[in-house]
Image (tube, rainbow, N blue to C red; front, side, top):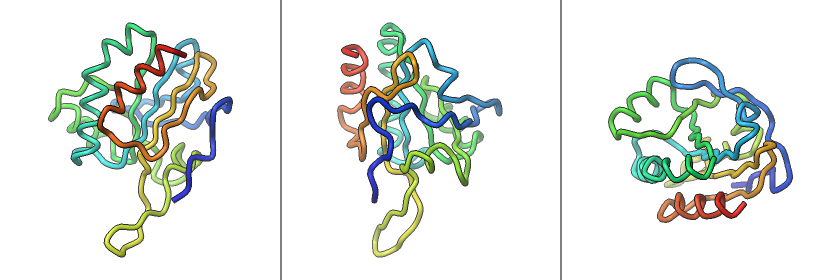
Length: 158
């Protein structure tokens, strides 16, 4: 597993993601406000559900701090809609392209191993971007417990 190849001071590639309504969103669409971009492996899995619910619970605090939230996985827009409905999520979710997407460019879609099997998967990673789209902080290989609170604190301090 490799760590992300973009770090503080870098600007993310401006690669389009698909929103749940089928439109496109890009990192540059958030210029003028801070953005938390959190990449997660799969909708409706325990860790991913907890992470999305934690960010949803803190959304009013992120909004008050002028920080947008966007969760990204390779799940389809329909799976995202179901995930949002099932768990009453308030965070915005986007779908990354199956091949050549933003997660590929960032190095967070990578080869993983579990139970002796090798497969491609998302490494849970969070980026905090400033108002100009530059990376302020990266959390690679995120542990979910307390993560949303830590990101909120960092966003408020930045």
